[in-house]
Length: 63
Image (cartoon, rainbow, N blue to C red; front, top):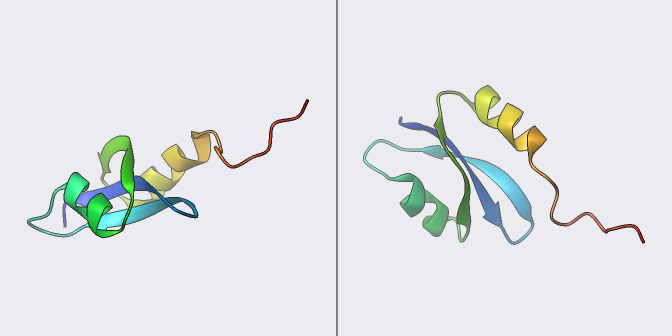
């Protein structure tokens, strides 16, 4: 296992594990998403902490 990445898919952000021999980009592409934030992160918890700091692109903006 090479760590965890944050990707954006159709319904928002998600965390994905990078299997041995895979690249972050290939995992994102297999999931139908794009790599959002650098990584890879050593643990799911570390990726979760970073994810919590990202702005929500789906949140409606107040006028």
